[in-house]
Image (cartoon, rainbow, N blue to C red; front, side):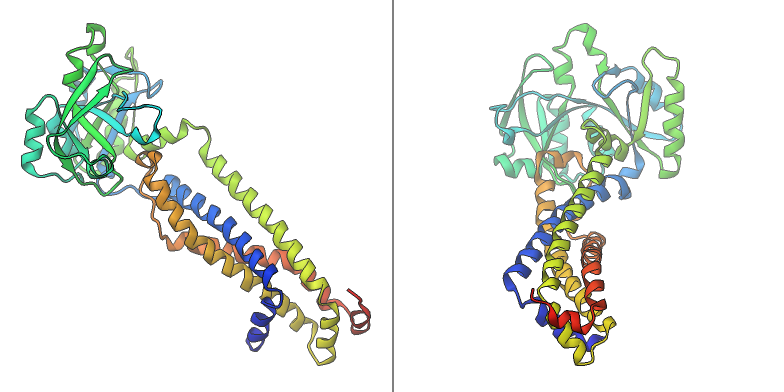
Length: 387
């Protein structure tokens, strides 16, 4: 059968405009599909990194936006398996102009600040910069990506205008850290904000970041913490860092269903487009099918040739779409939402395989009925065709 491959490739380009447009439409569809699959894989199928596997996050059971008492920290510290604990609070605030989305980046207050680089061991920073941050109550450390974006340097002043919390923060850059993930974020000493809060709010924090002794004790530690506050006025929810990051995504709704629905719509749409294209192509070549049969080509040969043409075009579109998706995935990682997403692999062979296989399936399904009808057409009817 493979001896017909040159004929298949040649037939693909007999109508170059239609073939090009078909490849482009399949490529665009597979590009969108590739991005969605990459995001879905990163959100729901990827494994936690070794550092993430050791960390837990405790928050209010009701909602992430509802604070929990600060004194819970000492009780959690006593749980067997807890190595370090640090409170963390989203400050929000405004940097320069809030109307410009480019000015948005993550701003977290941490307490005590010396625990930041112990709990998040993957963050790398020179020791002198780390000590300068710990000693300076108004100091801040920022990610390398944030420093590059705004051209921040050591000693620069960053002003955050309070909204959720009163007052403006005048922070001094004391360190710049490197991270394996997107690092457009800023950390500062939460005590700087707490001292200006009313008494009723001083004892509240958003979350506790917990570092466990090893990955084996993580499930037990999470259960012990939540059981310990089960009947308390403020109950807790303790989850892995990966699950906690997904909670930000879940605020948008059922993202998993949303991604699956879009993927289904994309495949159905391109199936209709491809089916119409193949039907037109086969109808234009009915007389040619009759000629091939008079030369000794069997119905099976005709079926193979037509299906082969559809597969070649579809695979080409799928491969192009996957390559395009790698650039869009990079854009997703660099977007403001990228800081809340798990690491997304830009060139993932598994995603590429899915794109090509889906494109191949679309090509086979869309062309099977026209190819089957053409292969069953008898010679007389085919030669009498005037299409």
